[in-house]
Length: 239
Image 1 (cartoon, rainbow, N blue to C red):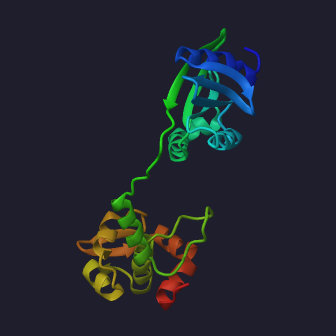
Image 2 (image 1 turned 90 degrees about the horizontal axis):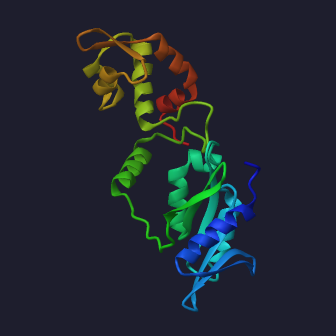
Image 3 (image 1 turned 90 degrees about the vertical axis):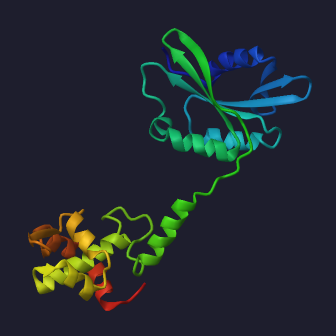
């Protein structure tokens, strides 16, 4: 099939709306597709060959004239779906819900358009707060010492409160050598030190005998990689 154009989406979308009882016309006052039913029931559809930001912006602008606005884009059989849609389908759906926009795909086979799938209908959106997530976020914020991460950091692992506690344990073992978990807990003030040592999520600790742990080579490397965080933890300073 030759390269798609936005105009290729118009006939199947027009036919679909007509099947719903709408009188349909194209390119009316900058709207790609306009359908009218029962004289004043108005629906607008904006067309793009792929889901993208311009399509969203067009849809938002059309909400000035009607709440019934759909975004329509093409899905071609045998070809990868538009990258944003393929990688972030759930987020795209969530965004459209938040914006009150409808969403539909126009499927194309080698012979031409083969059908339309309505994924969302326009509707008012009232976000539901997640109390558990909110609580987890606040606990992590409160437990974290200082501000060890730059917003948007990608160069190294995020320094969580758990990682800070693991670094406290690692620094103590680096200084004192093999230590009993109970002693390390008391001397570092890390209440979950025994669990951190036992679970060893990062590969920093090894059990040398029952209840006694030592630092691994990976742990020593972590102390070097996070030297700035360790120094801050040991000084008790906050950023």
